[in-house]
Length: 155
Image 1 (spheres, rainbow, N blue to C red):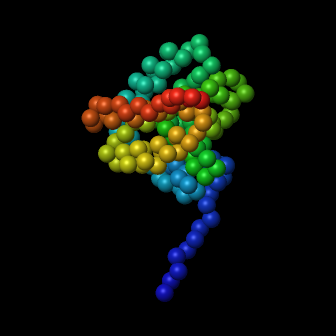
Image 2 (image 1 turned 60 degrees about the vertical axis):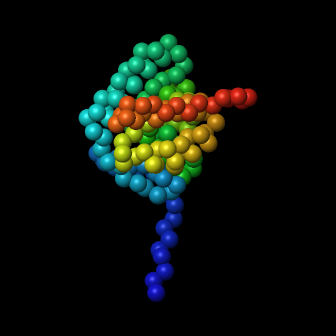
Image 3 (image 1 turned 135 degrees about the vertical axis):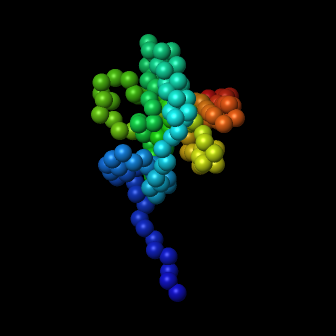
């Protein structure tokens, strides 16, 4: 009987050093997961969110980024939310950053294939980050938003 092969987990730091070319991948608890490309509608919704946020945040200390900028959720996970607002993103000292670990607001545009991962795995990782104030799941098929926001003491 063959025993299962155990592979070492990949760290977020090592993952960010990999050049995937035009392919998209996330690091999910030490394991690389390839991602499918988005639909035209997905990209349009993502772009509309970014444009709306960029104009409203222009004179603030917050900067919105698309899914090209990574969010490191812990030592073994790196996510690429569709749109993310970071406080640390503004300023020339961050020009060469490949990832931030302090997202404030996260937008995930969902498709049928990503709903479970977004609403279970990513939600757990995002809510574990102290910097996160709001998470918005955009369901483009149902044209609905699901907003999770910290409330109460220390929110």
